[in-house]
Every structure is written in C-alpha cells, then in structure tokens.
Length: 416
Image (cartoon, rainbow, N blue to C red):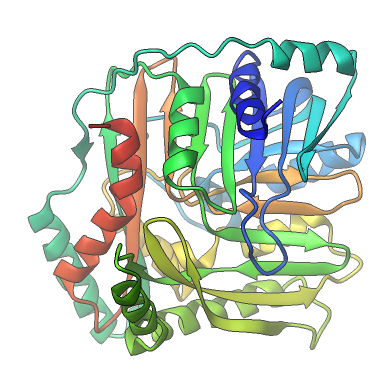
C-alpha cells in the first residue's frame, strides 16, 4: 500500500479509539532527530487524576507499569511547580495531566510498518487497510480573538515599560483564537494541517473528548540514555516564494541582533533548567542560533544538552524544566506571573507538552505550539500564537509575527 495512503487510513483508524496518539516526525532533519514516527491506540490503564503532587504521582504510576506511557502536560501544571495561579477562562477545559498505557503500538520506519498489540496484529492491519476514508463536513463558523489589535499594541507598550523598569527582560505574550459550537472531523483537520505544515514534532492525539492537532516545530525535552536534550525556538521570519528573496530573509534572521538576543536569553534559562538535573559541569550548547526552514517560515533553534544525574527520575527531569522557557520569558517565574496579567485566557494545553515515555526510561516531548485544541463534547475549539517581547520589540512587527504563525491554522480551519 502507498505510504501516504496508509498514513491517512491510520489517522482515521486511530479516531475510532477513546485514547490514541500519532507522533509524526515527517522525515524532518533536526539535530538529535525529529519525533519517532509511531502510533499508540487503546488504553490498558489511564492516569488523569491526582491529589496534590501530579509529577510525583505520575512518577509512581510510571514505576508501577514501566511500560510505554503516552500523553501530555498542560501549561497550567506550572501552578504545581511554583507558587502560581491561573484564573482566566478555560475554553477547552482539558485536564492538566493525562497519560495512558497503550494497548497497541504501530511503528513506521523507512516505509516499513510494525504492529505490536495485545490484540491480534494481523486483525489490526486488516482493519487499517480496509478503512474507507469519507470526507466529512467541518463546521467552524467565525474565528474570534480574545484581544484586539489595539489592545495588543497597548499591552506590548506596557510590557516594554516594565522591561525598562527592570521587572523582567523578556516576556512571551500570546493571543488566543477560538470558535464556539464547532463540529469538526479531527482526522481530516489533522491530515490537512500536516499536509500544509509538516513539522518535526507533529502530533495527532485524542484523550476522551479532547483532541490535539499539532504542527509543532519545537522540542521541549528528550531523554536518550543519560543525555537530556532541549531545543528552544526563538527567532522567526517569513518565507518568500522567490528563492533569492527567501535566502535574503533567512540571512536577515541569522544576523538579527534582536532575534539573537532573544534566543540567547532562553538558552541561558534552559541551561539553568537542565542544570537542576545534570551531572555538574555536563551542560553544553552543541548548536547556537541554528537556522531551520519550515513551510511558512524560518526559525532560529538552539540545542542544549546535559548528562542526567543517575538519581534523577525521568519524570523529575521534566518537572525541573517545565514549562519550556521559550514560552515563558525570563526570569522564568516572574515572567509566568506577568503572563497571567497580560493574557486574557487560560493557556491549558497550549505551550504545554505532548509526548511519550518508553519502557527503557527514555522520553520525547514537544512544545504544544502551532496546535489546534478541540473539545468535542462542548464544541469548543481554540489555538494560540505569540512572540517574545524584549526592550527593542516593535508592537506592529510582533503583531505581524503572530499573524504569520496563525496562517497555517487559519488555512486549515477556513479553507478557500
């Protein structure tokens, strides 16, 4: 069977399950690789509730099963890491923490498919092969934003005043776009999004009635053996259809003092976050200010690594770095406090992380950006975009960057 056709059939087959996830690296070239491309479906057991200490309780759940563990962390888990709170409206109402032990795993590598399952693997292969893909009507209606252009510019001006006063030196300020009374077919939306914007850390995930269709380019944290890898993105510029003009834009990003400064601030922050889990002296920056090209834009990505201390559990390593510093600003705690003041909606899963733990105690998690979040039971849908505000940020340019980042998702939700 043609690989593209199989992938589309797989996406639709996954949707028949209450719990599923597809991790899609899209054969992208990224230091330390993109996501391993594989799917997980069906839940042997689920972890979605906790009492007071979500990370510790997840650690205990993982230790009990020592199996594949698939799921996500919401941004608002920050309130359990630091003394923070979130009082804004939550339009999608996704759980702060949700993981499942999968019943079936389907690995895709170099055109080869391997099925591992508690169910007969041949039966699963036949089910996927015989899926009939039927186009469904997607009803989204108007897309609203929680902040007007004028409000955005006013808030950016106030953020810059606080930077000049020394309250913080970088703040990741985001907008939320949303639709109500939505009826969409998530497999079709994800397939369309991944076709328009194939990314190295892409995810299609369904946990009960909550769906994520993600075209994320950014890795939060990966563990491979004793090595931890973080790859924050800071620095964005649009693409141009003309190759010569596109290369000029790419070089403009590469040499931008503003974008380099933003990226360096987050590299320093992530070195500190990884240092909490690292063998002393092992934190390194193997690539600084790398320029990577995606379908709609060029981005600046740096890579920070360390050797994990033997006594630090994988879940603890994630807690020590959560949430991704590229989505907060710096200093991190103060930035998260100020985000609550400037943003108008609860982030929820946005700027959290989706990924997996494997039985060998490795893991890989993205940053949930360029993502659509959908609650099927309430008909609510949202996506968020933002940028880093520093002292030399220009409000109109930052607003234009937000629109650029929203472009692929708007094309998916409101096709011509």
